Image (cartoon, rainbow over all chains, first blue to last red; front, side, top):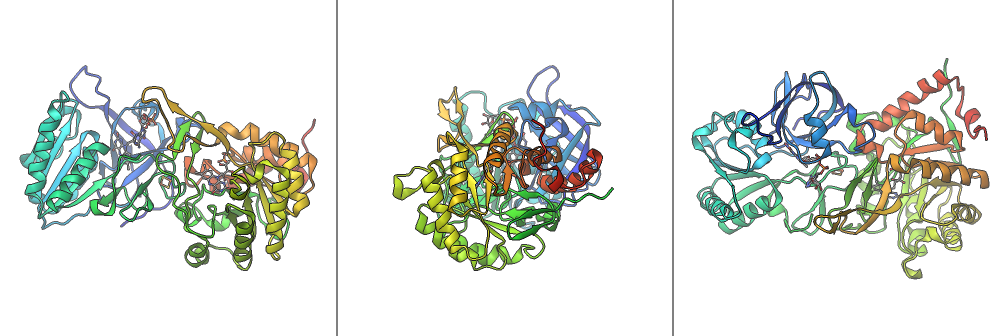
Length: 265
Length: 305
Ligand SMILES: Cc1cc2nc3c(=O)[nH]c(=O)nc-3n(C[C@H](O)[C@H](O)[C@H](O)COP(=O)(O)OP(=O)(O)OC[C@H]3O[C@@H](n4cnc5c(N)ncnc54)[C@H](O)[C@@H]3O)c2cc1C
Ligand SMILES: Cc1cc2nc3c(=O)[nH]c(=O)nc-3n(C[C@H](O)[C@H](O)[C@H](O)COP(=O)(O)O)c2cc1C
Ligand code: FES
């Protein structure tokens, strides 16, 4: 796995709001020029610190690598607080310090039928996953979302789009139907590989279903992080042995059986 | 102009005053990809206990204005694993590695000091007296002058030729009385300060932001408190003081030296960007040259009041 050193002082290439015209859905693509981060495994992340953060907020923010090429690092960001608000209001030329790729990404098994399960902004790492997969014919996707589909990089995943299902959750009544869909899919891929990213309750459902059907599944956690590099012990998750492991270095991607995935956190 | 960034600390030569603070720099190795560990004045590693410690439940950290709260609960791999797996990989011949000690009673502290002082790769022992003394009903060692003095004495007895630093808690009425007691007990230097106790809550979920409810505040928000503590302690004791609290630039380093610190530690700022301590160490001599400061020894405690 490429572990690059050093913080990179990059500049914003573009910030583009996604989704239907006129709607404030809070979903953005952020492109950073000439990242120089080497290569990444899908599921790895970067820590991002816009120069304008100054001393507040103190923490940088972690984001999945949505797409990484020599020319640009693309992040898919949904605003949910002051850090993401600032980030999504940057303009081309603004300075941003970035370090990574960090952590452990998803397993990629070209010959294994693989099911990607994404919830909302959790779709981000699967753009890179699908783009770098040598046999995309073996990939399928189930994507649960709340905002209109065009807010997300769903259409960008052209090489899987024929085997992709999107499910929009408009009301709480939709949730049981979505879980039914997940159940059927996890059962179908019990002999394959399942990779999942999304909100914690979604990942807990995936983990429960994977255990029930004996499926091999990986989940990508989004625990709060201060440093992102293994220095603070703030981001931990309880493993199957009951010990706390750092999600920034040993994760964010874990095999379901490595973790307890309790309500905690 | 070439400037002199070296400082004198008991029992160890230090090439520059920029060290890293315990708990904010892992075991050092985590930050090796972001700079040359040998360029630092010293590395204080995560608090070590005799046995590994699990630490507190999640969430353990919360962001606050210009700072953060933490309640990590001293999760650590235990002294044995540190000595076997981590210390040999650190550049201890070039950069002092300081062990930070955590225990629940004075005997345990002394035993830990005995183990660590036998290590060639350990340059000094820093005693975290902010921890609760279990045998005294859980009041922190650092909150009572007599207890702090006795603890310093117990550790010093088992420290062999290693300097003992006592790390003071700011959560006290009179930090100077604790400082005096620690020095009388045998502390060779004082580290000033640990985190301030604090709290953060969410009005919507009605939950505390830390599972532990209460945590330690750190970061730029606490710099004025740390600066005040260093100033007061430096006025009162002759033992060297290592300043820590909110330092995030070479300018901040000079502020602490100006009020009397011999050296400093970079803590929460390491989270802002992992090359922070290296950048500060690199920037310091440039800044000194710009300000016409030839040596830190000459600049130290030159505050005009
Ligand atoms: C490995 C990893 C990859 C990520 N990838 C992406 C991505 O590709 N796109 C994206 O939009 N977001 C991603 N996130 C989440 C993103 O980092 C957070 O949304 C961001 O840090 C929030 O910052 P803020 O300042 O806007 O919000 P804050 O003001 O810090 O917080 C706003 C609210 O969100 C909560 N919150 C903040 N961070 C977290 C967290 N990590 N977990 C749970 N609750 C939290 C706060 O408690 C608060 O209620 C990822 C997180 C991790 C750990
Ligand atoms: C996440 C975290 C963990 C810490 N762990 C320890 C520790 O194990 N032992 C200790 O003596 N101090 C510990 N501290 C305190 C720091 O070493 C330092 O004294 C304090 O954070 C103030 O400095 P700062 O504002 O530069 O961070 C910790 C601080 C943080 C933020
Ligand atoms: S975020 Fe600091 S150890 Fe993981």
